[in-house]
Length: 434
Ligand code: PMP
Figure 1 (cartoon, rainbow, N blue to C red):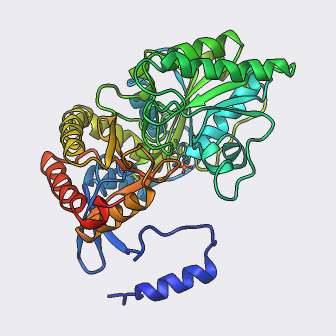
Figure 2 (figure 1 turned 180 degrees about the vertical axis):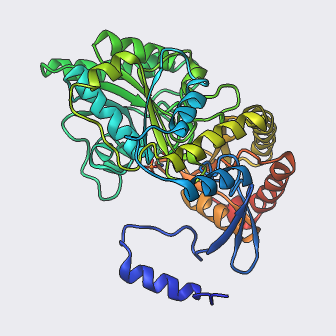
């Protein structure tokens, strides 16, 4: 048996030899050595309930997914210039879940690559490079993706919006620019304002990119009517509409398989990432035939790994597993139960200001009596929950939102355990003084 490297040695080595901008989760970092379903195990055999991993969509190391990956890896792995059944099978599985308007796919390796390709498509179709995106939105780590990610360029180390990026205010009906009911039209008008700014400079619109629930923004649900109206404005200005489904896609939201379907719109392009490979690097871009046609302007699109037989076997099995195990409906049922329990907790503990989300993509916000964000409390809560073997994460511009997005096999008993410990810690001294 290979001997273990102690955690302090791992940390020291990382400090010296891995990039300084890589971060580690938790004040006392953890080494995970095994995963199974909704659980992770550290090197001491300690079991953690994972409530934050929407990448391990059908469960960590799901046996059916592992098996098809291992089998295909032993046979052949090549690029998509050779014919292979797997790429067609994955395409068929994906297209089955989509409206017929979105019928052409490109396979890539990460959410960033998917959004990068989506923006390239926009440029080919519209000949414009001005992009409208949400405040505190995040779309990936490449040059172009950072340029449209307010979460990054408006945050630490950022240099503000580039000339061709136009940011509308975070459509947050709890603490945003417009609060309360019926804010959809008001936020859509903010998108229109950005369109007017671009046009006043004598330029046209490339695209609007937005997530159906803005994840890094703090699990912000788009207000009713917002997306329909915003899409109308964008299309009237000649732009395309991109739905970034990297976080929320593949049935997680319960009511619908894709986030845009909650809003009765059909995007021109959707980008898919995290859940599709259940941890294996696999992502995709789906678009209309019109977009695909214009993108194919004679320049070959080649991607060494995108669409390889191993990744495609894994992706197809992930989608089959979601179907076979009824995980979309399970996410709806368990998500609704958990959201109701969190809402009850919010009545008991005033520090919880808002509970939101859909299916198994939920969040709650910690605030004081005047709805000021309590980021330190959220950080404390996440660290204390870890002490009790439950993994949670914080996000939002003020880091005061607790995000819950577990593997989809999360059960009612898991939800009860989560609520039990939240209740216990919310009653502790630090959480009741602010
Ligand atoms: N879009 C969204 C909404 C994301 O949350 C992320 C990653 N957190 C990305 C794109 C980029 O995906 P990746 O890290 O796989 O490149």
